[in-house]
Each structure stands twice: as C-alpha cells, then as structure tokens.
Image 1 (tube, rainbow, N blue to C red):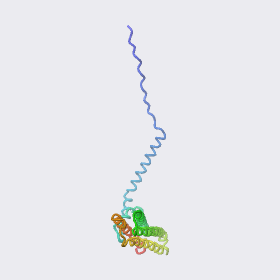
Image 2: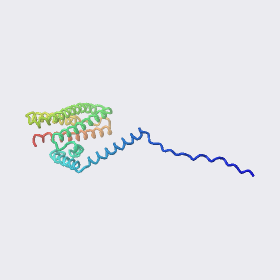
Image 3: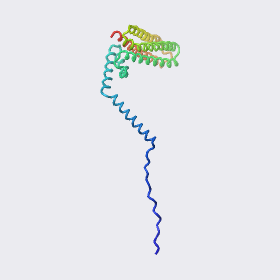
Length: 228
C-alpha cells in the first residue's frame, strides 16, 4: 500500500536585526548630548547662587524705585531686567530709559491710528501730538545713549561723568516736556467724530499720561546718579 505524500514544510523564517544607520545613530547621540547640555544649563540657572544674585538685584531695583514718583510702576517695569541690572545704577537707568522709549513709541503709533478716523481740531491735535511724541522718542534715545557712556567715565573717575549725566538729564527732561505738550494740545478739543471718537481720544490722553510716568521714573533714576 502506497504511503501518502505530504508537501514539504516551508523553511523556518530567519529574523534579522538590522543595526541602526550610522547617520541615525549619530543624530540620536547629538540629540541626547543637546538635551543633557540643556538640562545642565537649566540647573545652573536655578542654582542657589543664581537665585540669590537675582533676588539681590530685585531688592536693588525695589530700593532705587522707592525714590521715584511712581515706585510701583517703576518696580513692575524694571523687575524683568533684574538678571542683567547686576545692581548697577547706570544699567538700571539705561533700562528705565529704554522702557520709557518703548512706551513713547507705542503711544505715537496709537496717535497715528487714531488720527485716521478723526477730523477737525481733534485731527490737528493728534498730528501735533505725533510730532511731539516722536521728538520725545528721539530725546529719550539720545539720553539712553549718553547714559551708556557713563560707565567708562565713572570707572575712570574723569570729570566728564557729571557733564554727561547733565546732558542725559536735559534730554530726558525735554522728552517729558514734549509729552506734556502732547496732552496740552487737547485742551478744549471735543471728540469731533462723535461719542466713540471722544472716548478714544480720552483713552489716548490717559495713555500719554501713563507714558509721562515712565519718563518721570527714568529721569528720577538719572538724577539719583549724581544725588546718590
């Protein structure tokens, strides 16, 4: 009797583990190295020494802002600069001037936008205000640049220190005067374009009033360089 025939069994499958591509392995290694470096930087930044230095600079800003007319606004606006101020009155004065400059530019842009929908005396007042604020911005920038020269002058102990401080004070004071001129231009001026326009103008005047506070603080910190 013939034996039944069975089909041959298929060969056992062979499993091969492919080694990672050299470029992929290198990329993975580089990513891991970058991650470890980032972790090290983070731990360094939050080290006790770094935290203590930042706290000391924060206290330094708080003490100096106490001598301004608007200490809370001063502290709030300059606190983000604590890591770079490094308890330097000069650096703090530069930071205050730059904050003021930023606020002036913002108010100037707001005046330009507001004037597009204004007419008559309101439009004229806004036009004059834009010019005054642009002048204030130029003066504030000039003052900030002058303050930056004070570092070498102070370290050298030269007579130019008081002179350069005086120049910076003059320009910052002139910037404050131009901001006042902007607000004064709206005396007796109505909304011109209805209730909404009038409300928008009032908001803008309030904005410029706030800008004056930043500039006043910057000037006070400048004055402290020679008074203190």
